[in-house]
Length: 486
Image (cartoon, rainbow, N blue to C red):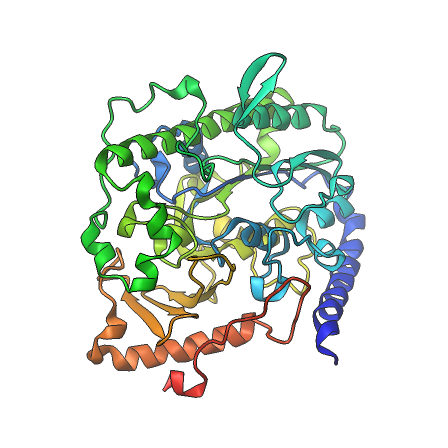
């Protein structure tokens, strides 16, 4: 088979099979009153501990905390690529970057990818499908594919002049979400995706964190604890290419304690603004008598460094960058399943299969994620993943490309453009802050070799190097051939 036709043919066949199975099930599911409404809430760059229910003693997030108390919170949820356009394509499709190949910001989902993405499949299954907020994949927005659309391309800005008054984008997205809920037909289940811009920074501005001014007094008298790895000493341990990376050079936003306090408080204020809109969304569900039959999913497209390792931003494979919140609140669950926490490792590739499974829509065979529904009522499946593959290939000056694997105890990171090859190995049980790189310690040579082999196996499973794509620059050499695994 020709290289250029492999991906298209594979996804087209998978999509066709998935649609056939979905259509076969639709005759029963369309008439079923058991299909829940689904609200999928996505924040942008939310640190996994930036919720009260995650143990944060400062941030005010009562509505997120209530979702966790009424649902299931996944404490080890990760993204397989920590950059927004790739992560959003992964959330839509349930596919790794190495398969969907959406790497650049101007790449749209192809028709083959749309055919296996959850909004398209949910609409085919009879759902009233809405989208509000930051779409984040390509420049050509698929408004016609949705029953309700108030999405926007790119990053947008936080402040808009409306009827002579300045309004914050987060509140405007809350307005749109409430409007969708109130106008949705009562005889069809609703699937609404709400994609907040917050708490994403506005890059290249002297004041990048921009909450609504009505929260200006919030956290005013609080003191945000400094991360354990905040000091320059931790950055000094890094190789030169990491010390010169965008994560380190952007750390001016938090590089002294005064700026750290100011920036993190503003970051928290933007999230409290999101939390208030979650409260409005839940109130609209009650007003329309949907609250008892609506599943709410809350997660984020990336994690975020807030001074850990003296870094700011995301992109790297450290925990703060790849770990995100994940809560599923299903009011139909028995009371004993409310407030449950799950420690198993879940991924953003699991979002689409979970949404489809909730709606009794067949999961496409191409999907690389798995439904999280078993965790809601039964606990961890016996065959659940023990490790997973990470990839970050976005091409930008001083943005570091890396791949690796994250297991329950061990993490292995491989920096693809380092010369000589630089690797990191962390024992997360003994070193959860990822301070000591054991790849540099000779006594861990056997473990390093084991992790290299597992990395190669997972990379082979999830990355298809045969699949060129317009605009896709190709995979960097995993360095440096067989000898690198010796």
